[in-house]
Length: 94
Image (cartoon, rainbow, N blue to C red; front, top):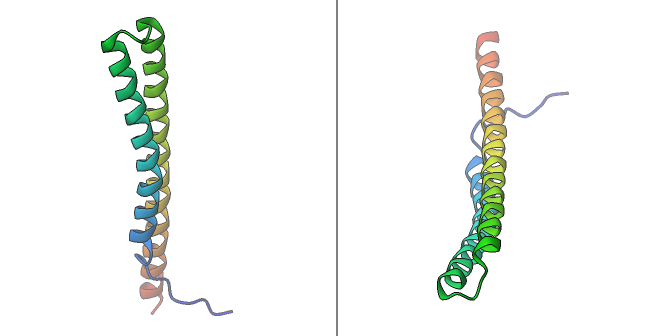
């Protein structure tokens, strides 16, 4: 069965933008929560010890989101590399 010739960069920009949109929404929520928490600490309505622990948890979530982004980008790069390798194999076979 003949397969269509791969287009190495087709759709990668759209995929990248989709990933950023999702992650940026999560990060925006975390950023707002951290700002709210900081305000509560500064005006004395939040316990400083609990706020410190909550902030550590927020930092953990941010690192997890960043790790997911890196893994997603690595997968995208691997796909692009495979496509380029297929194109090169096709050119060498001629």
